[in-house]
Length: 149
Image (tube, rainbow, N blue to C red):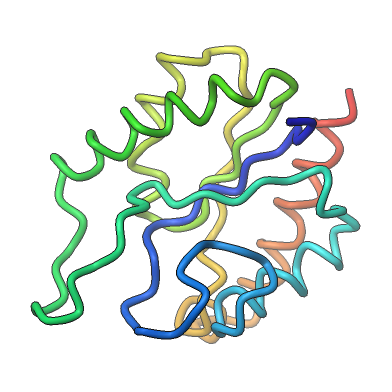
């Protein structure tokens, strides 16, 4: 895999739409926003890979639950396997508070990686303040710069 930037999101959306994998081409509002922000930062598809810190699909028959500390630990353990498949990786962008909680495990496992935090690209996050969009694009632009060094 040639990706130099990992965009680490939180978890799969709680809906039954398809496809059920993370992609900048998904029809969901967060993915549409992320695709637009990646384009604004001039980050080509080949430069990035997307992953969810907690990648398992939610049980749609149960009430929504917060991502617990134990689930974050479980997600980081699986993420280590993903990181092993990415020898050219230079930067991890932690999108949202849940993804940011995985930072210590990532830093411990791959201390050479640069970690950048940004708000989640969901409409709820983006609509909180007009500067959120600027912050996301700025973070992704910085990731592109760091990955090219």
